Image (cartoon, rainbow over all chains, first blue to last red; front, side):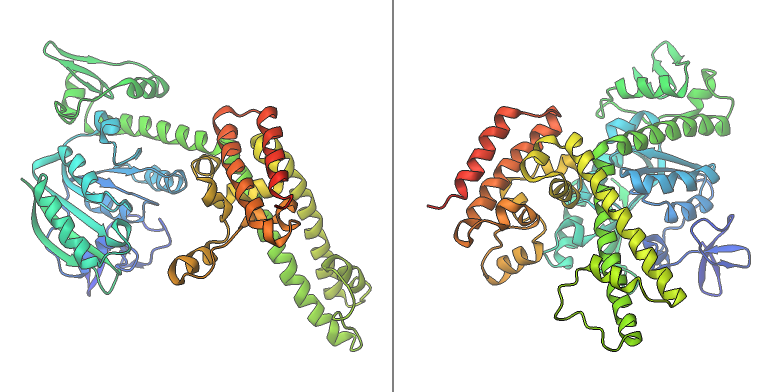
Length: 200
Length: 285
């Protein structure tokens, strides 16, 4: 990852969503992006130049644009029409983003489009986030890594976020994943945890 | 055999699919992938079978297809007419807020110019007070008043449009409670599809969320009505039967929304029976 004086940046053409620039690099704000927050917390898994990424829950494409700066190709899956319009605008300018309008919980629909990926990144607001992750693990290379941004409040608002995390970890280990690292994204994001896991 | 977006691959080799993005999209819809036997695309296969020249070309072609699909889906989503209806209702409600806000502020300003002016004990509606203030000479003030008047005109026109559109998009709901209130229900539910999936009891308290949640949290009396209170048969009903009218009306609205969503036509028999049931509920014990 590229740091300039403690500021996380990515190399690419600026002016995507009004992000600030620093020495010709785009500043990647940890308060806006969970992935940036994850790196600011000092985490290990870095994006590589030749990575192919499957990004579930691409939303407006702000984080996607930074991921695309770092990697070879991003398959960005988003379901809702409004954010998809923004995502298309971002993808029109970045040739390594493949925008897929589909429901991440039904991978069989977009399976004919996908190649094996090095990183499965997931930021979806769905109570069945873990189920979606395990259904999409089929796209991961054997050496691949999955990085889940767990929205504990989307899974269950009434439970304690810590309990939700513990339960999610248990469910992940039951399916195709081995947990490598978990952490809360405080102070950048409330009740969000990052779970890094490898394929079994 | 594995079917991919660019063609099929089986024991004999690769059979590329030739066609426009529209043809590719249609074919993709028809592919039924068996996830148990699924192998992700190896982009080299697309090059080997002559579909793409290289990695860059492969991605470009894939992107073309994905853009085509996404744009078609977005267009499809926005052409369903209840989506526009929702936006129109929200604009209408926003206009009401803005007009009231501006009028109130203008009155405050007007009072400093006319110390003897008071609205308090005269029945001056928003519209009438604008007519009074129009006589003021101050240039900037007069311009603002004219703008408020113009907003009121737009609001009236928009309301007519909302009612007319509601009559065609949600004819059964509109016949039961009037186009405007029916459109507000759709707006609060999010879309006609979502409204049609709601039970009558939810429709009854749509728009009374805060009362509903305080009821569930603290056990205060449950709300009898939300948006449907705006309908005359609910707010004109006697206090002791108002809850019953609201409940019967909401139950019928639930059915009406389903007819509107799935059948998209007016059902006169259903409407007659429903109107009668609602009227009976309001007749007292």
